[in-house]
Amino acid sequence: MIPRSVQITLAFLLATVLLLGTYILHVRHSEEAKTQAETAETITSPQAQGRWEKIRILVAYDDDQTLRWRDADAFLPTERAPRAKAILRVVLSQYVQSPSPHPLASTADIREVYLLGQDTLLVDTSAAFADAHPSGVLLEQMTITSLIETLTANLQGVNRVKFLVEGRERETLSGHADLMTYYSASEVHKFARELE
Amino acid sequence: MIDPGHGGSDKGSVLGSGVTEKQVTLAFARELRKELAERGIACRLIRDSDVPVSLDKRAEIANEQRPFLYVSIHAAAGPSSIRVYSPYLSKPSSPPGLFVNWNSAQFPVLERSTAVARSVSRELQRKNIRVVGLSAALRPLIHITAPAIAIELAVPSHSAATLLTEKFDNPIATAVAIAINQGHATGGQP
Image (cartoon, rainbow over all chains, first blue to last red):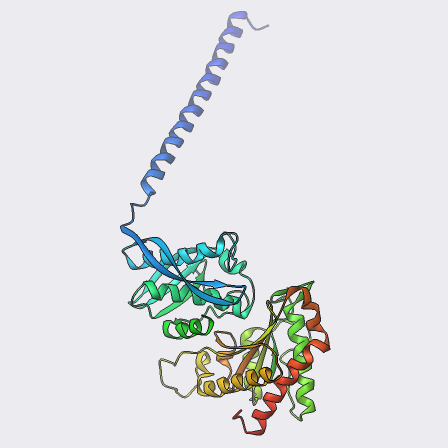
């Protein structure tokens, strides 16, 4: 038979252990939350330098299979690569909305634009941009042409553009348009004229 | 050399009513082969069944045969029309060397390809078929050493199944065969 005084001591010790355990968990969670909040503040990018500008974008229309110029307002950074990304996103926003003149997946996006030398841009797109792109020679070519032509119309000195998907090279956009090639701005301008 | 696009697990675009691009391209390619045979022009299909063939392999097969002309066939949903494409290709940055550059193999015959595309477009127009002539960055056209064009058949989704019937294909295949035959008869100068 365990004496009553020992039973009370054991119960007290057990209660103390439980209370301490709960307290330690509470402190740990609150410290984690604090750290996460601090990290989030740290990785917030600084406000990009730039200004609102009126730009011309070349939009694809599936109904009559044409490309037509349109005016748009956009906040454009001053640095070339972020500026190119912002310009491309303005065009893409026309296609991911509903209704759209040239529907693309709502998650289609430009992940990043890289400057290669002085005149070449690598445009890295999201998987959805290519995976869910409507298939067809003309439809795919309209997308490529509208993006490149808008880019070169609003960003001086771009002579060549190549597309990547999730950071990797891909043979075609959706079974047709060539994504391995470096598109020449002057040749794309000819495509655009054929479809305007 | 006729190349029906896609095949196997690569179905291409869906044209509606369960009809896929790979079915239509093969049906049209067979029809075109028949029309050309009637005019005394022998031709081969890159694929004559539902099998996958990579783009590079298609170019390899075509180049080995040294054909008079390479015709790539595609199909898409859309307002009824035919699109005839000539290859998009920038001038190679380096001069031709001992070996043919795989990515610009088409360049020496690019003008002939464009001429064939124009000729086919003209013949389709004569048949009152709505046709659009364009250039396209489309593989494997740039790897082909012979004159090369691509044809895309566009049909509204509701009538996609008609693309698999001979009645729909006949006038288009006939017009394309006539244009190719004219080019063949004039020694590749359509």
